[in-house]
Amino acid sequence: MEMEHWDLIIVGAGPAGITAGLYGARSGLKTLVLEEKTSGGEAARIPTVENYPGFEGINGRELVDKMIEHCRKAGANINELERVVELDLGGEKKIVKTSLEGYRASYTASTMIIASGCHSGEAGVHGESQFRNRGVSYCAVCDGAFFKEKKVLVVGGSNRAVISAIYLANLASIVKLSHQGNKLEAEEALQNNLHAQKVDTLPNTELKEIKGDVKVKSAVLVNNKTGETEEISVDGVFIQVGEVPNSQFAKESGIAVDEGGYIIVDERQRTNIEGVYAAGDVTTGPVKQIGTAVGGAIIAANEAFESIKGYATAKDSSRSQR
Image (tube, rainbow, N blue to C red; front, side):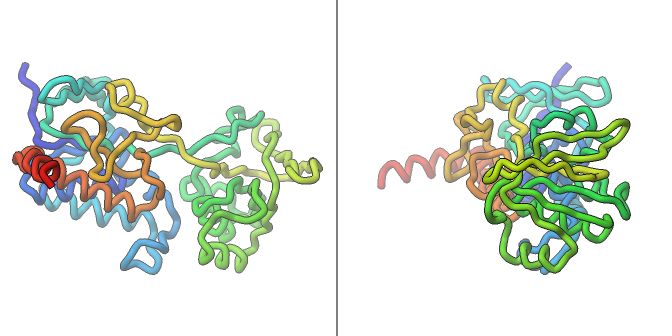
């Protein structure tokens, strides 16, 4: 049975994947976006996005919904709940094998863009896995409503952690934010907003253990300067300590990644495999933001278009003659 062929297949429907789909379709490429969950990626879980140009403040879900609508109107196909399980990138036509509710499908593509993003990192402490979904959460927007008028601890010092703490401050009765450093890593504007909320910040503090019975009851914290240990009563622990790239399937297909698992790309978003590009948080780009994901995706989609139309070869040739 002949596999359906696409000019461009994009893996992932977060801001990078959606943008790549938009630009691919607008360029006239037959474009397919594959997403193993629902469209929007981690950006859809952000309570308020305040640093995306043109929006002083917008809900993450609302922002990505606008992007998705724009992408579909441009003519790209977005298949949700279809997980990429295998890539064969050895030939001129790239083969993509997927799984959808047990049903297997295969496609071919002239070019590909990997925009599979990241997932939340784990703290790696005792009790974390035991109480997952029983008080331990990795998404404030998803689970915050379960902790109205309760006590919660947010772990982390990044933008994401501070945004989560601010969001939870409007729901929970007590919000504490613990972070390992002396200072928060978050943007100053976010820190100012945090200080205006009822959030108790705990610097130089590491989470060591999560305790409970059926659900979370407490968290054990250690001051990494004094060595002092404290057990605090909490109903929920929101872990926001980093991200892990969704790149295993890409690595298995021969796409080069760095020691952290991030896909290695050059200034034109090219991977080590011809015709395969990557964009967004899954790449080695130093800044993980919606804006940089969008920018990288535009470059990747343009490179895919030029590759198909034969412009990329000519551009490389002209560059080598300079």
